[in-house]
Amino acid sequence: MASWLRRVWQRVRQRPGLVLGASLLLVLVLGGLGWDAYQVRAARRAVREERFADASRCLQLRWAFWPRSAEPWLLAARIHRLNNEYEAAEAALDRARAVGGDSEALQIEWLCLRAQRGKGEVDEVAPGLWRCVQSNHPDSAWALEAMARAYMRDARFLPALVCLNKWLELQPETPRALEWRGWANEHVQRPGAAMRDYQKAVELAPERWGPRLRLANLMLQVARHLDALPHLEWVLREQPNNLEAKIGLGKCRFYQGNFDEAIRLLDEVLQESPEEPQALFFRAKIETARTSARAAEPYLRRALRADPYLQEAQYALVQCLRAQGAAKQKEAVRALARWNEIKADSKRLTELLNRGTGSGSGSPEVPLEIGELFLRMNQGRLAEHWLQVALARGPQHGPTHEALARLYQKLDVPEKAALHARLAREASPSRDLRPAPR
Image 1 (tube, rainbow, N blue to C red):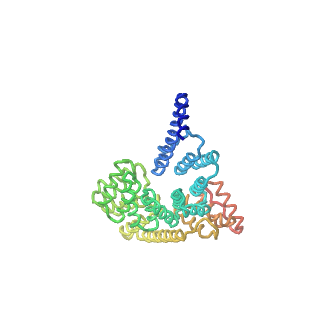
Image 2 (image 1 turned 90 degrees about the vertical axis):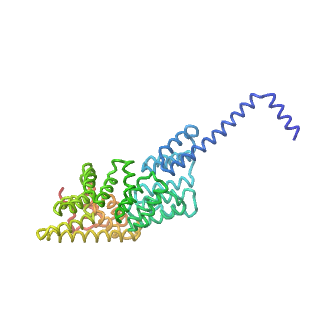
Image 3 (image 1 turned 90 degrees about the horizontal axis):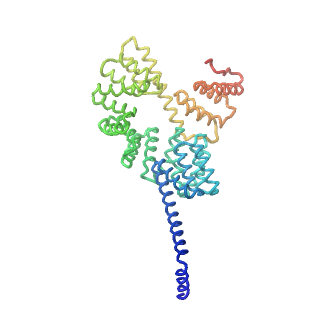
């Protein structure tokens, strides 16, 4: 061994330039590998923290030196997906496959993209994503995030909560998951749980205005306006033109009895967004308290034109009409009947959504009823989604085509309205289902 080392040392002494060059090359390679790993780690961290611009910069630097590596393309696809840039996400996944072949991570990201992109595929890909979660794959949280996002988009709050609970079990201090779970809890009538989620999200990420604003709104609903006030003031310091925060602060001033300041804030909102229903509703409340029910009525009617299913405004209209005496009693009776209709529709919709019906096989009747309820509520995108679910279950189902014809007529898409009216007539020849004249 000693003689071998002596021979090596003699050769090094004889050719010092070659050794120096090899040493520099080794340093550069090792340094490049370390720098490359650092950029990938930094990009991953930035994506987790929703700093997508920073993540993209890290990836651009990485591609400059190592263009033929799959992982940066996978991260780029994820960034595009999270930004709802679905074509760009698909292109990045194609590049990842071209340079690195198929991999488990790539297949999971494809499934996440299919779940999220809004083509009704979440139920089809959910088993594969849940297998990823059950096997403790490193991308489990991303699989849960994609499913939760898709379920919330389609107003399927119970399966969304299943995903969000599991996500928070894996990553308990994730502000985005807490904010989303708070939002889902609000929609299944669990305000206490929602407030706890929003409060924790604010504690973990004080700079996030979304959960702070939702927490303040829930506090206002339970008459904790003094607790809501600092959150609303914080949001308005950061975003002076945030209309929702201005409405919230106007509500606070109303509850404090400062009507002039409440009117100033709400009128600022209405100047920018004249048919904002919550601003109109609270302007009506101020007029009721400050002047008369007669002065409040126009605001309530405008609010209900903007949002026909605003229950609190509809009931306030009932009280407003009753307060104006005998001349308004027949209108009050009709307004009360309308309020009962709104309550019944909202209750029925909640019951149907909580059944957990998805886009799998089965009768089209339930998704058709959900779609028709959303159509009555002027929720066009949700109505279209659920009517398409019904159509997938019954492609020749006449009532579904009839509902789609009404939807597209309402959305001013005459070609689609005419198509579905024709298909409805073919499915039910005895009925005249032509779209009404425009």
